[in-house]
Amino acid sequence: MDWDEFAEWGAQISECAAEYHKTLTERPVRAQTNLGEIAAQLSSTPPEAPEGMAQILDDFERIVMPGITHWQHPRFFAYFPANAAPPSMLADFLVTTIAAQCMLWQTSPAATEIEGVMIDWLRQAMGLPDGFTGVIEDSASSATLSAVLTMRERATGFTGNREGLNAKGNLRIYCSDQVHSSIDRACWVAGIGQDNLAKLPTTGRHFAMDTKALEDAIEADTAAGHQPAGIIAVTGATGVGASDMLVNVLDVAKRHDLYTHLDAAWAGSAMICPEYHSAFWQGVDGFDSIVFNPHKWMGAQFDCSVQFLRDAQPQLDTLKIEPEYLKTSGSPVTNYSEWTIPLGRRFRALKIWFLIRAYGLGGLRARIRNHVTWAEEVCAAIRAMDGFEIVTNPILSIFSFRCPGDDARQQRLVDALNDDGRIYLTQGMHEGRKVIRFQVGQFDTTRDHVMMAADVIAEVHAAVA
Ligand SMILES: *Cc1c(COP(=O)(O)O)cnc(C)c1O
Image 1 (cartoon, protein in one colour):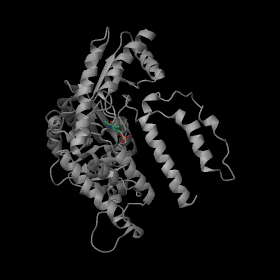
Image 2 (cartoon, protein in one colour):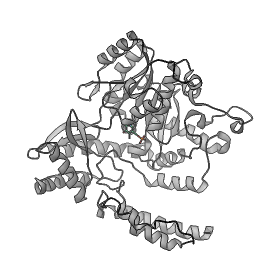
Image 3 (cartoon, protein in one colour):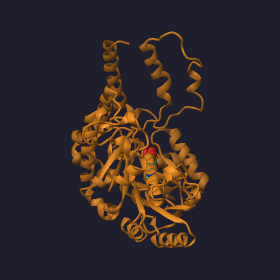
Image 4 (cartoon, protein in one colour):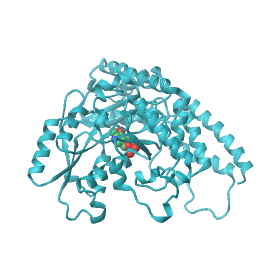
């Protein structure tokens, strides 16, 4: 393909992309294909001879599209959102065009410098104090792994990387029983082990970690000769939005000199609205590490996860490695690959720059506020439905409910709704019972899309009951 042909196909794909988004509500939200149906349509061997782009794109429409679940559908209420606002998509197209590796300052100075400024824009937008720095990573899972490795190294006097963990005894990490599975996996991979991740019960309206239980666990572990290494708090957990009381967690961490990491992967985006700070963000400035995903609620095309650091040095002491071929001469510069696990990195800051400039913080805040309001409204509508029960009230824009009947009934309703295709919901477990989760957060959703969900739920429930 020469570059003139590229331009022609590129123009055609842009048009298809706009058309796709404009007509998205006509498609079922969740893919309606059966297992293996897509793979069966592909040739089982790679072609020897070149094929034309027209044929390839035809096959994209014919084979691929039916097997896609539409995350940008305005009636996507499942999981958490993965928004891709159009300006961020354009930015990512430019990033793909340049295709630079942004591991060192000198491998693309603009990428490093814009990343530094974007981290600082977001720091200000989210009310974090001056002095926090940070880095953009692929996912919250990676940022949490970096933080857990830092906890490990700090607790072992920065000897774990060199000596291994064989003689280090039991390092212990603490969190609530609401945390995301990425916390468990970070502990597996960091050599801490699942059995050394203590999951504490929660209390109160926001299902916050019981910090008395936290204190007791740390004291018991210390008495038993184990070594507490860190605490992981959560704001807006995946199940039903559980959010810890950050001040109380920090009190305990300070008393025991523990490194702290906050997982705000989803809810962090809402913290650009100052009115949510009193309930969710008090004390956040005391955390050593904070992760949030602009690629979820905020609108930056996946992948884009921000890790803020109160002091970057412990993480650099944990992850920095500098072979000769990566050394840069001249004055000291920021090389973001030293802050994270992967070496190669995309120019992810560009989509944040485009996104914030195209909407302004005001435009981004307005969406989040609408989502929270509409979640409350649709929650009230479901509460009023015969036999339906709200299990957890809205925490920001997530709540959970049950229809009449046992756990099997809940799953049957979820499956029937997703087969129907007008909306998409997923299930969860809360306090031993299956619940149906509902979150509002898609970038283009409107009040009508959200309220229509209550009617669809009532109708489909009546049909399967
Ligand atoms: C989505 C989510 C994660 C995982 O995020 P990735 O970027 O996919 O790794 C972790 N924690 C919470 C609370 C989340 O919502």
